[in-house]
Length: 201
Image (cartoon, rainbow, N blue to C red; front, side):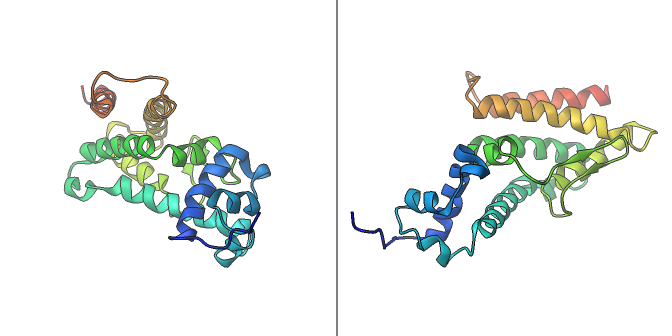
């Protein structure tokens, strides 16, 4: 069989997207640039024209997902800068919408083993790096929930409870465990609003 030598289009972009799929399927232990080259229908040497090694590709994948996720979370947020409740509501709905529209990203972030973890204590939520997308949710949630507590760390439990709700619904939607008769995002918005209402009523 003749060696695959040519690739039409943006190979680097395709390698990042298919690299996510391969990591979701094989995990880090089973991942290799040789397997990725086969998925992209190029020669075994082709990936090295864009990435020095697997670690460099991992970094590119993390940057790709983080950037797109951050942009999705921040969409339309500036329009509600004087309304913390609406900002948090929009963040949550954007979270669900983005992950449902990008199931490979969801599986990579949450169902693939990673060296970095989000650390939760009674005092704070620590994320791996200031530019981590979840810092956005953390900051907006803290601004909103702190209004209802004298204890300055009580917001952490509120935020984790909210995150667990939207994450659980997202997982059910991504895995197609449930299907709504109608717009699932309308149901998601009502669910989030119901939780936020419990603090305000």
